[in-house]
Length: 148
Image (cartoon, rainbow, N blue to C red; front, side, top):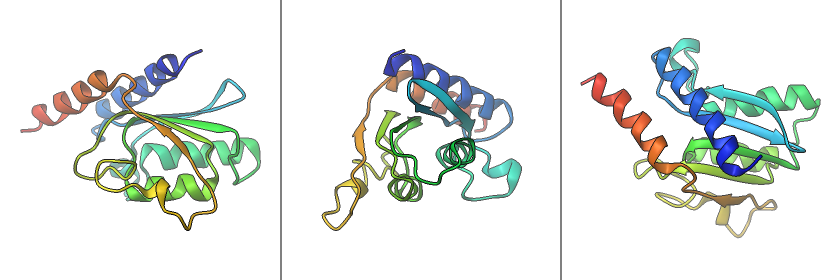
């Protein structure tokens, strides 16, 4: 599968989150070319401000692999991660991040911050954005337009 294929799965998770009334962000974690976890935002349904799609998916992968270190894993997410999620990726030792659209208000990879680039860090996450960005933006815009 390709980055686009995995991002399609993340978009499916984003749509499922929207259907539950959650902000439509989806994430998928892949290890050795296998989808190990997939999740959507769950902050509202769980009353947990840390239940962003990325965090929920990383928790599931850590349990599935029996290790809190996620070396060799690639995380796909529909929107540029926030500072909390980027920090968790560093702590988990995620090897690679692929995301959809930029987040001008909270993005911590390149939009507002460049968390992965801090020189004091002992782990580097390879990051690339823009994969199916238009689709990611459309899901978010539709979700928020329906609530206005």
